[in-house]
Image (cartoon, rainbow, N blue to C red; front, side, top):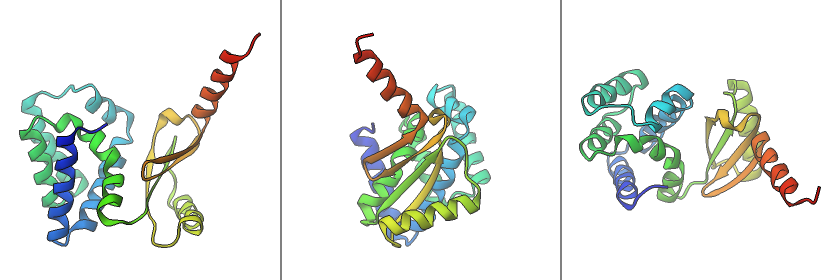
Length: 180
């Protein structure tokens, strides 16, 4: 969950991006950040806070170069470094689609799978979801190895979880309640 300060930071980022006509660029940057954090090793580095203060600024520059991030997002990342919030970037990236939907009013859908999807599968999923949510819906794809298999769809704050992990949890809950 994001703190009020982190929420304000993201809302300000979106306002600046909109004022500069760069909302779609920032959206693309955050999609690339989400893809980068799909790697378990990268995600664990951020989660565990293994970065020292001296490593953070070069890391931001490396992210900017590797992911071709816009100047707006680069400045946002340096702002997070200055405020001691860079370790929260993983959480901010995770919640970004919800903020974008709230800001722009568009319907934002995140489709998560245990393994990455090919471009053909992404296109097929997009077409199927557009039939349900309409052609103006916006999509992002995420990889979450914790799902084991299956998929999860997030629309705003609502989640439909069709993963093997959620089935195992339901089975465990059922078995705990059963008299064996």
